[in-house]
Every structure is written in structure tokens, then in C-alpha cells.
Length: 198
Image (cartoon, rainbow, N blue to C red; front, side, top):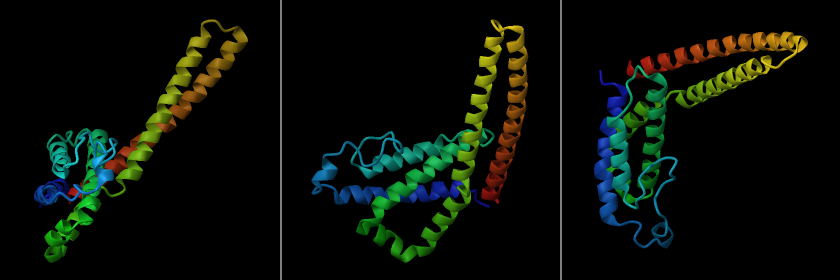
């Protein structure tokens, strides 16, 4: 059975021809606002700076070709999420033109297959990745707080040393709970990836 990421690749390959037709039709040539812009999309989504849609689709193709190994779950999930957002951005542009209607009117099933592939591979990925990112940020802050108190121990009085040690112990307890939460979220991501391949 074809993996969800392979299905995405197949659909992106279809976007290549649609982007070429879009660019040949010169849809933006008479739009002064678009012509005044350095790029079609936000630099948060794409590195490319161009008014040619094909350049952005090529960037997606390159991103798919250079995906991190699935064993690097965090990086892999982040890359897949960004690729999904890039695809949706390109499709929004195509949907505003007859190119999309001509290519997709007789093939509603293909569009549904694409959406199913995107949905499966990105199922809850935004929420899970956000949760994981927040937990890692909390972990970093706790570690910084522990290190800060350890530094204070050097010049602390006996009373302050006792207080600081109690605070360090409490922070270590919180850090342990935080790392358990990280492990739990990683398990959820692993399960979602297995589901996307089934």
C-alpha cells in the first residue's frame, strides 16, 4: 500500500503541470499590486522569491525529496506540516483561476484522494507538534532555572543554601513530570505516523 507521503508526492507532481499552465497564462501580468510584490507568498512559508508559481512548486518538490528520516520524528513531523501548508497555499492560488477548474472538474475523486492523504499524514500534527514544542520550551526554562539556582549556591549563606537546594529539588520534580509529558506526546506522534502509513 502506498505511503501517505508517497501519495503527497504524486499529487505534488500533478501540481507541477498546473503551475506551468498558470505561469503560461500570465494571470498576474495585469495585476499591478501583485507585480509590485517581491513574492507571491509569505517568507514564513517559502524561501523562494518569485512571481512564478512553478518556482514554489519546485521548492515543495525539493522539500519532499529532502525529508528527514522518519526516525527523526520531530524534524520529520515539522517538515511534513510545513509541506502541507505550502501545498494548501499553492492550491488557494490555483483555485482562483480556470486552470484548477479545468484540471479538476473531471477528477473530483483525485482531489478527494489528495485531501485524504493530507488529512491522514497531518492528522492532529499541528496540535501534537505545538504541544511538543511547548513542553520542550518548558523543559528548557526549568533547566535554566535549575542552573541559575546552582550558580547562586556558590555565594549563598547556609540558610540560603538550604532554601536553594529545596527549590532545586522541586524544580527537578517538575522537570521529571515535564519529560514524562514529552515522552507521552512523542508516543502520540509515533502513533499518528503509524496511522498515516496504514
